[in-house]
Amino acid sequence: MTSPFPIPSFAERCKVSAKQSFGASFSHPFVLALADGSLDPKIFRFYQIQDAKYLESFSDACAILSTKVTDPEDKLWLIDAARMALVVESQLHMGYGKTLGYDAKSIAETEPTPNNLAYQNHMIASVVKGSVVEGFAAIAPCPWLYIDLGQHLLKEKGKIPEDHPYASWLLMYSDPGFNEYMTGLLSRLQKYADLADEDSKKRAVAAFQQSCNYEWMFWEQAWTEQSWPSR
Image (cartoon, rainbow, N blue to C red; front, top):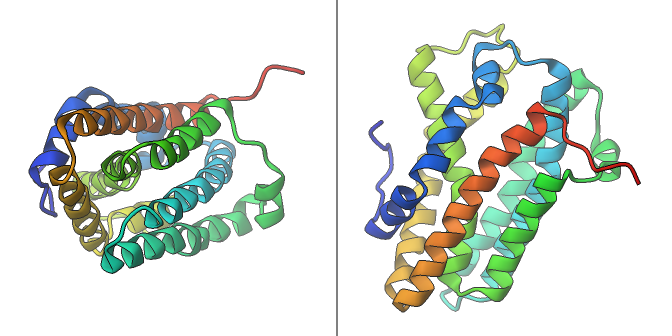
């Protein structure tokens, strides 16, 4: 699939290294059932609540990363990204919450699944302990994969039927407005890769690949309704 936004060389290096795990999400049974509308609403509800928990940490990761850059424009971009993760995404979550029976209180009281918590910890550790390029690499797969996936599904379907049970989700992530966001994210990933030594770049590639692995595991935790062992 031709990308609707530019992919700089380091982003391409990251994606090539994670080709298998990045591509695996496209054929996960959760994604396929979501696309054709057959996904059990109970499983989608589980996913939405866990996604809201994840986005809190994604927002934290962007906010923390903003303290590690000195360019004011990069700081503002990261702060806006942190805000968007909570505000824009919450509109989608709360919209489905009205029909699927959950609210902000339900989300707050839900414990992250093992896969979800591991992904959150990976992102936070990458931005706290790693270099700036490692931090950008760790947060990039989530929006990149969702936007690629949304636009791929739109291309496959041609048009999202109004009565599709997950039309709002499909329309949100296929919105070409996200292309500008990805351009901003990947250009900054390239900027800080250009400033980094090779060891930092290798760690960044590894952080990107790990996030791609966790993206697949996120679909899996929702599909299986993963839970912690009984205490």
